[in-house]
Amino acid sequence: MPELNNRKPLNLRRRGIYLLPNLLTTGALFAGFYAIVQAMNSKFEYAAVAIFIAMVLDGLDGRVARMTHTQSEFGAEYDSLSDMVSFGVAPSLLMYEWAFRDLGKLGWFAAFIYCAGTALRLARFNTNIETVDKRFFQGLPSPAAAALIASFIWVMLDNEFSGRELRWYAVTLTVFAGLSMVSSVRFYSFKDINMRKSVPFMVIVMFALFLILISSYPPGVLFLLFLGYALSGYVLWLLEIRKKAPGPDA
Image 1 (cartoon, rainbow, N blue to C red):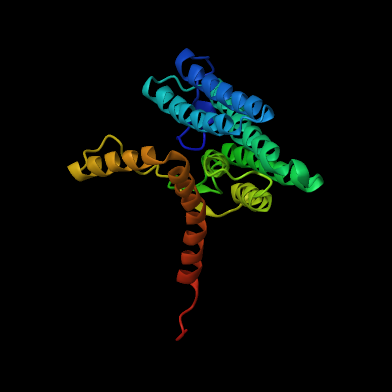
Image 2 (image 1 turned 180 degrees about the vertical axis):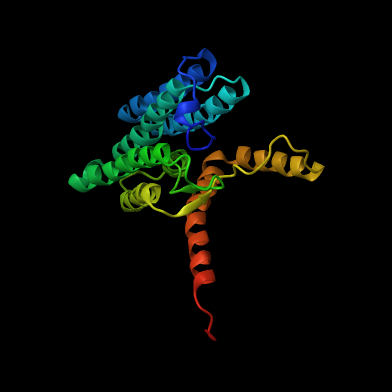
């Protein structure tokens, strides 16, 4: 996926079409399309889960391409188009069908802010890939924004809340996610974590406990996880402002 993986410069990517990574990208695209269809059929939980499946597949295609040395310009562009469907159109339509239908113009305007935010986020990422600090994303990554929307709907459905009851909370969350994607707030990218480096045994234990925690209640844990990540950039921003502020003796 372009936002969670390092990509080669345009002039260094091969122009061929490789089967395995593009099959994974096609799977992510299908999951996004499936989410749209299920949202239109009012099967909102299926749509939310499909967005998470798209996120997993999208996270694999770039890694597989690098491991098999099959990165290509075609794959990079195809991946961005797939992301727009899975993490832009699908979440905005899902939220509209679930909560915004009765809000008239305000409803589709809020959904469009999110959709446009995704498009602008992807375009900015593709053009700034070689100039930004690899340790941080500029703006909330679109997969994380989509996961925030999908997990919110999933956990509310699981607790038997309707979209009509929560429509104003849904508007706030959707607009927040859309604007966060196009903001200049920095979010930690986790790219400086070396997966090939040996780690203490306790790291593996903690990872296993983390998986158990998620499996205990996936909707709630995932929502809290991605909400925390979405807020982490603003916490980091406030800490940076505080650090730059002159002291009382200045």
